[in-house]
Image (tube, rainbow, N blue to C red):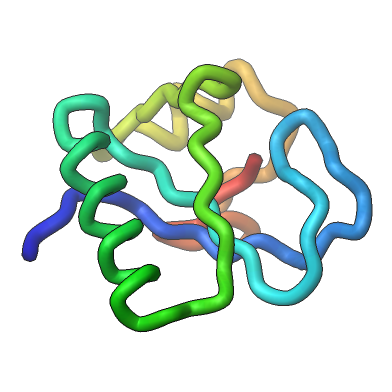
Length: 98
């Protein structure tokens, strides 16, 4: 089965925030395109049930939005509106921030 998504690991958080629920252990944020969201959701829930993984899948698509700025000028474009250091050293390729 093929999926189109980006997976980011989250640090454990005992307190919920607007972007992350409270959880113990490993947590992951999955950024999924709208056109494949239902397909990915069905595949993930099937795998979790079939393999009896102890985890919870939470759909936050009604609570969060995603803007994807990609391409060779993406850092320069983002740097104009963010105070964060987006250099290669501080923010390597495939890094994320919620």
